[in-house]
Image (cartoon, rainbow, N blue to C red; front, side, top):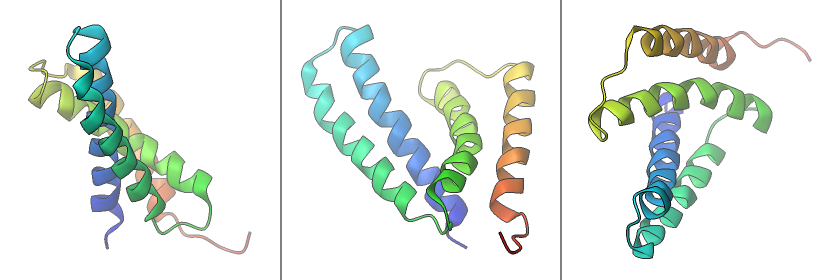
Length: 109
């Protein structure tokens, strides 16, 4: 029940943390941006460990699709650049893959 919201929390923690480093290094802003950046990356790591999965690799693989969609939402909302049709098609494919990994039936391994 909490899997998808937890993945979304992890994605926005990672994206905002990395964006803080981007702002510092690429936009030549204050190194004070690193403080919320590191905190956000800590939130990302913590949230990803809350995912109910038997293996870390499976949790990370499914997260990849969520991260791609969240990155495009970030680009649109925060950076003001609307995703184009190819961004959208790619994100849909990735979300389908993530859904298969997250919700696929698991038998004996």
